[in-house]
Amino acid sequence: MNLLLSCPVCFGDPSSPMTQSAKWGVLFLLAVVVCVLAAIASVAVVWSRRARALDRREAGLEAFPAKRGRLGSAEVA
Image (tube, rainbow, N blue to C red; front, side, top):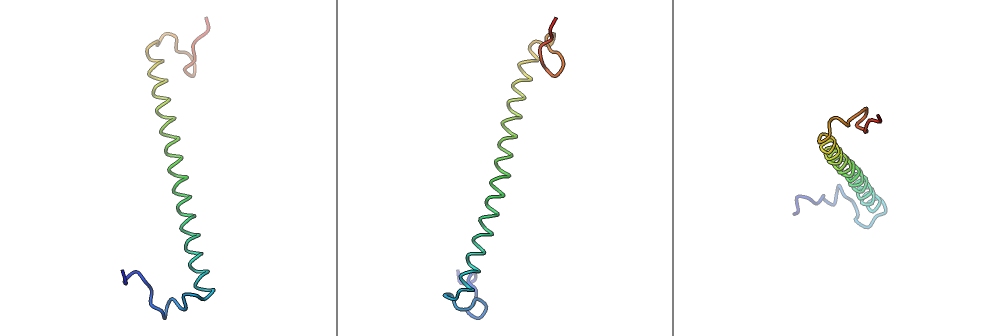
């Protein structure tokens, strides 16, 4: 565990304002990364649901190929 901690010479005084600001900066950047990854994951989930719904809709339309018109809508006689 000591390998992950910085030495006092590099890190400075743990209670100094500069050290506290550096800690908050690291936490802020970590929060930004987590938010971006969550946004990417949510887009993937939405695309997956849309693809599943499109597959279901296309499977339902293939049961009646004669009624299929432009853009998958029913033709009007």
